Amino acid sequence: MKKARTRGPFSWSLRPLVGPYLRGMLALRGIEKAYPLAGGTLPVLKGIDLSIEQGEMVAIMGSSGSGKSTLLNVLGLLDGFDAGGYDLDGVDMSGLSEKQAARYRSQFLGFVFQSFNLIAFKTAVENVALPLFYQKVARRERQKRAVEMLAKMGMDDRADHLPSELSGGQKQRVAIARALITEPRVILADEPTGALDSTTSHEVMDVLREVNASGITVIIVTHEADIAAKCDRTIRLHDGVIIEDGRSGEVVEPTANGAVSSD
Ligand code: ADP
Ligand code: MG
Image (cartoon, rainbow, N blue to C red; front, side, top):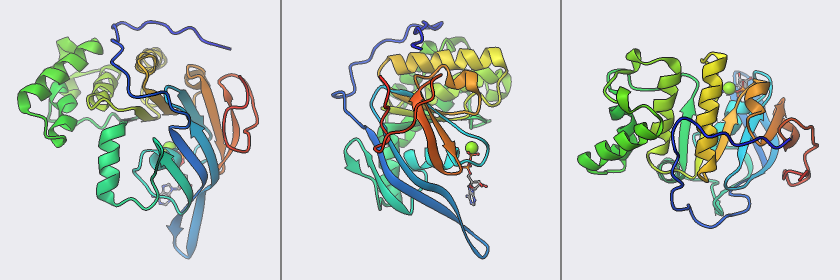
């Protein structure tokens, strides 16, 4: 079922695109990862083949402990892997130094978390501007871009509020603005609606759909079916392997190369 793209409460300007439309902007082949455990190791990812194109909106589902966050952390270069290959934008990501990984993260990727991860003693606009500080953008420019990004989120009237003065949905909008401020190609969100009520969850998903409509790839870990239904494609993990991969709402067996097999 193809869902209508609803317009959110703010107008998302289509920014000048983000390079050519590439196949398999994120491509995993046979990814394996285990965590060290007293007296052995715990295998968590057991051979993941997955290809995600630029502009996709993908849900990663699965029960608790199935490896969703681990997979997202590998995709986000927050964590390494033991075997297999990962190409991001056509570049081999295996064996990156921490410094190289940080550079790719800051260039390509934006992160959104269940618990928002805002800095409590900084205002909304200061939180949003922070990634630009690490990119050595001048103070005035940081402030200007952060205010603009908050305005796109319908949050300009809350720019000077501390996180403690914001609702959960507002905090997540600030976190999304912070993820977008560096103009990433991919947003990785780990249970972004996990701490929100149902109405607010759907509002946040509408924001993420708007983000996706501007050309940014969006990958969302969730265990809620109605959240996954707002994505175009659902990947289901079970015990470290992909057991389903297809259009959201349909059940499709994954193909050998991990691509969507229905169209
Ligand atoms: P999910 O996000 O699907 O709930 P995770 O990827 O967080 O699953 O975890 C998968 C498995 O790996 C779980 O059994 C979890 O306890 C274990 N695990 C996750 N992170 C670590 C870690 N840093 N060290 C050891 N075990 C971990
Ligand atoms: Mg998790």
